[in-house]
Amino acid sequence: MRQTTMNFSNIEKKWYVIDASGLILGRLATKVAMILRGKNKPSFTPHLDCGDYIIIINANKIKLTGNKLQDKKYYNHSQYPGGLRVRNAQSMIAKDASELVEIAIKGMLPNTTLGRKQFTHLHVYNDDQHQHQAQNPEVLILGQEE
Image (cartoon, rainbow, N blue to C red):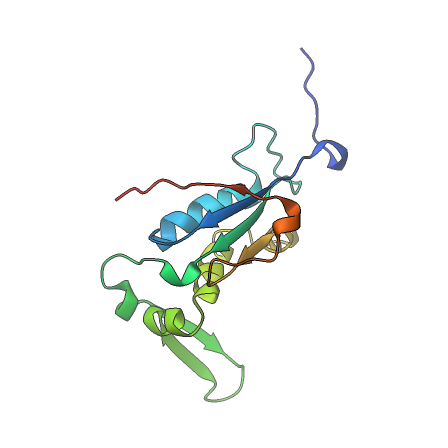
């Protein structure tokens, strides 16, 4: 039996849309990162971008378990003296929940040029409207674990 090697010509990419309302942030992020990398496909190749495109809608209706809304902190620094900005998850959801989802997913992708390219295949929206209807995305339903 002959083994075929994946290359750019035989990689097929799909578009998926995920409704994040009521889903837990960490569990959503792990599944989305796996699909972005292409690990859900039998033709997964670690050094190629064989992942799919993901559209996440209703990011403002995401859930966090426990006391993470008040206790989980996100840090940014401007590299200037006194430029540290600390926000909790509750204030991030109130301002822009898509940034919270993007940070969680980006942390689960590899910190390489390939990981940065795969991250560009993620599109997160706070409401249920998105601008990718021309790609005919399939609805992907992630199971409720709780």
